[in-house]
Image 1 (tube, rainbow, N blue to C red):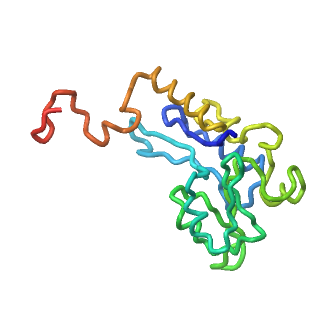
Image 2: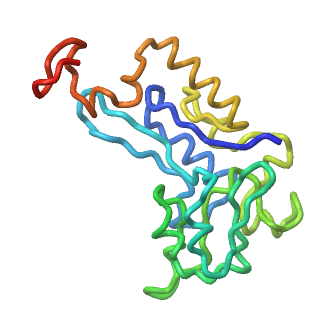
Length: 206
């Protein structure tokens, strides 16, 4: 069984926010909720990088671990979903998630949270596939239709990849090899400086 994953290629993302718009349009996301957003590091500085962020459907999801009512569940494809009928809006998942994926509607009484909403990998929810109830609560179930998430399909530069984790990893690995940057892609220069091999760093020969 394929395990679904997202990967965003920071070398290709141009911060167009097409993925954000596609998600909102496809799933009719509630006002004040952003299932996907684009984050830019060093904005306006040469060498800035952007990355599209949403629920990463973790193998060991912290949101699942902290939910007191166990509203989260994982599908056979590895997609982490939640049941809004069980959710009590406590917000624990919001604090636990390192990606800020769980969102709460901004409308309503001050200080009161509604039902949590997050990226579903366009896989719907616990209701029957393609039903009106499923669409109203979770958005369109594109996975049941044999399609990929709308955000990835709408990415004009193909920076956002979604699908079988092994296939996505192979595509990204091929890109890295063709770029020829090696460890630089993973921030080696940021972590250890830009010294060339053989140049002493803190008295240690590399």
